[in-house]
Length: 288
Length: 183
Image (cartoon, rainbow over all chains, first blue to last red; front, side, top):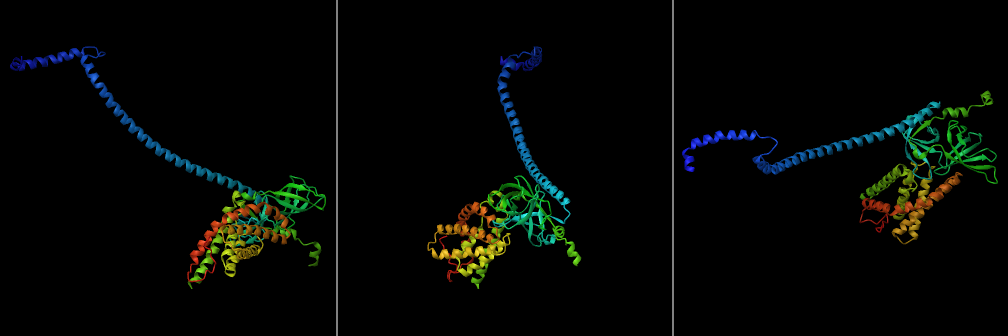
């Protein structure tokens, strides 16, 4: 057989080559929808391999994609976090500016309502001992501050200038034990002397027993001490005690100003007030 | 020469510490929740000087510290200087009477001096006829202030002692400041 094939090699090859297209065409002429035997064998062998290769590729491609995505997400997250932090800071700053603006607006309104010379100052420190209640502000004689000037906020009286440096001044607050402010009850016009007592309250002293004072009454400056402008709020009556004896009554006042949250204050000249208080009597002017 | 220089450096450091204490007490320690503890570092410094120094050499930093503290306060002039001088002298007397030099003794001395300081300031305010204004404050804060000062005694004593050792080390001289190494 082999000898015959070798002998007629050319013809045999020719026959095979002629037959191959015929066989191939015959196979193609079959329906595409059915796998033939060869197809089945090949597909059976190739499919797991294909799956494995494709799966690996898919895994690799997706994994890489996912990895890149995670990296990008991480970076984006860090950026967003940074952005968020910046925005939170900005928000806090804006809130602070808003609050400051609100306080300054209130001070500005107060400033407009006063005719005296005014200087805006910032509180920088408090008294070293708790027994005394003073504040230090960042304005001094170079800024026009003088000893005895009144110190106010939009809430009311803070105190008066005790000592003046070139760029710093010390304010003795109305809460100090040794401070005294001439005051009056807004409703009944009863007068007394406001003195500091504790961290929370002041005492309105020398209020006559017969004077009409009730809890909740507004206490204002009388302006008679020549230090503070008249009619500025000092606080509200917190407690009234009338003893069974004596000519005065004990009146406790809650200050209008929240001293623990004091940041900006207005220093007000009392020259105008002093002049008004010390206006000479007609008899005095006649003699001159 | 060296001894003199070191002594001056020591005085300078004591005053520098007092200045830092005053700055702390007038700013950060005035925050609402903290201020009720009534920190008074300078009082502890004065008590320390009272226990460690010879009467005259200790008096100079005490007076200067008092004057320094007064610049940070609305207290009338010489209120704080007088208070500190009395605190210093009583501490010296106590230190001489009580032979025991234990940490407990230092803590008790500071606690006692904290009470004395508050009482003495109340007494001085009384000269202005305003003692009644300060009375409520005195009773409310007497115990917290005493406890705070007592709690701070040993750490601050250690700090002051360390500075003393660093700035006054002269093994050939007498222990002029009577520095007790137990603290």
